[in-house]
Image (cartoon, rainbow over all chains, first blue to last red; front, side, top):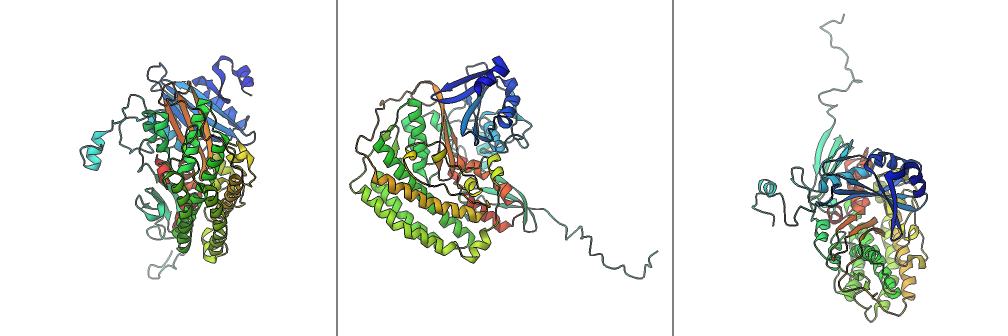
Length: 158
Length: 383
């Protein structure tokens, strides 16, 4: 399947495998089309997870990863794309309803925006929080002290 | 023209806009509410008693588990996973250990695999028992709570004798097990199986044909298999909607392929079917335990794993069938002793998203039933 994709889309797709798990690195511009094709033609009807990884030293700082599963073929595939800080991705809520909260969590933790998301706001952290904790430049003891002082009435959460 | 001295007949067709049609009342439930199983806040949009829609506000228990992982070694992070789904800590540990083992390309020895399966399935029963007790309590049946907690205690005793902890067990290590099964482990497990079998019948006697239970659960919180898949809902909720899918069969991990068991499914996808599915699951878990305890092979319990773990650069996604659904770990290694990134795909978080769909058109009281039947643990939702 992945090799067929390679034939269709050429250099925009790089099919890879690690420890027996298939994934493909897809160019950002092909993402909407690839996800659509994966769902409709290849029947990856279940979006397991969306997540991101931050590499602050790279030019395109983020890896965004979709983990997909097909009930019909009992197969998993991961789609990965590289994204610069400040760039956005199309929301996949129209494809898989489950991605609503998953995209909100990626936004909450990494500050990656999803265009066309019905209600893109923080999910685990409070709405007024500043900063994106899962970025590598966010320290483990760091927090939004201003928010803590105003809303909790204490000097620090530590 | 109407005579101003005669009253016009009462128009009963058009409701009074100011009072009778005062639809849409927004009320807040939680975050401190005994029926939300933790700190979950639900904002309900109501028309009278009918739920028009709702929004979940979560994150009250957020501890930044994924961030902590990036600052710990692989071994050090192991106990942290127990604190996510704290009623099924053993399953969390199994998923994590197997994911790291995959990254290291090692496999736990057969003896460790058997003991792992026994403990994980015991934990599945304990998790379902806790669910049943609290779910029934929410709906108004108090007795099952006492029964299930009494019997769950026997499982916790086995955990305690095995590893010294009852809830957050940290039972497994990367590469196998830390502790050999104690003397009499097999006897204890066998005794438990024969002890709990009639007890599950007892729970069913209390509920399965109970009229109040039927009224409160049949047709409540319906969700179709198609909607489940679209919403990423897994575990007993998916199976109760008629989708026969269980990761233990679909993509077997540990040594589940060695055991015979069935995947129960429901038809209607309502609260009652989910109850039935979980009851059968408990019995199926007992079947697995019975087979496993008979077949524990001799041999080592720990694979050869370096003291300082430095998995080769790469990424891996590994998931298991936790009591609540698909629990996945996505781990990125940069070749150092600490994981570059660990992402946990929590079943409770994804399942909770379906609450809105399942509650629309139901009554307020049914929201409680649906939260219970989803079997969420807020520690896992918020991480």
